[in-house]
Length: 219
Image (cartoon, rainbow, N blue to C red; front, side, top):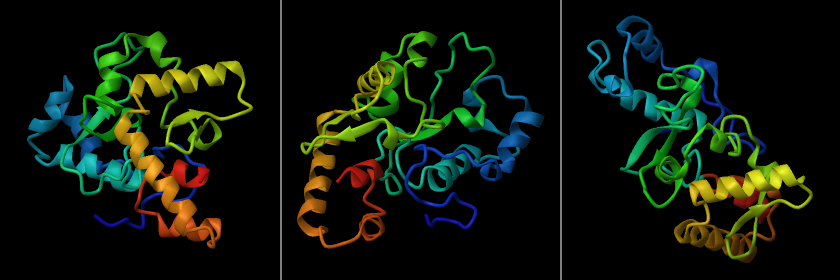
């Protein structure tokens, strides 16, 4: 994939997924409005748009998540186990159906030990969601930071409610899984060792495709 001109600009201090109305796949809107799907599985069986699922997945990943996992920040452009996750799980008692809400779709790898799958298996009810950071609206750089060993922690200076939300989110997505910590620790060490002579913007540019942009900001 390449980053198209219609994609959101890549710079710091943005939510992990930046929803841009112009990026909504036109075939997705047509599918929802004219094929009247009943459940999410119907997206795989569209008569008019047989590639719809993959088109939506690739557009969200490329244009709204800058090629990174919506929860983990791992680079996913070459991953083979991608799927569209519903941030708000299907089948819960939401005020409206969230299955085909474009603003509820997040692309992540399919790994039961962290990220989307872990969240689905460990988030019980709507009250849990009220305590989670939302990748569509929250700004991670304002809420989280890291230790030198790659561990994700709440940023200093937050109020108690925000600290609790960060801790709860880290736990529900298992964002301190050993693999994620190890990759972040490696990146931090890499920056400290080899990039100290560069400006912040030069470091961001050099590591643009390495993932973990909030780690780059920390280091």
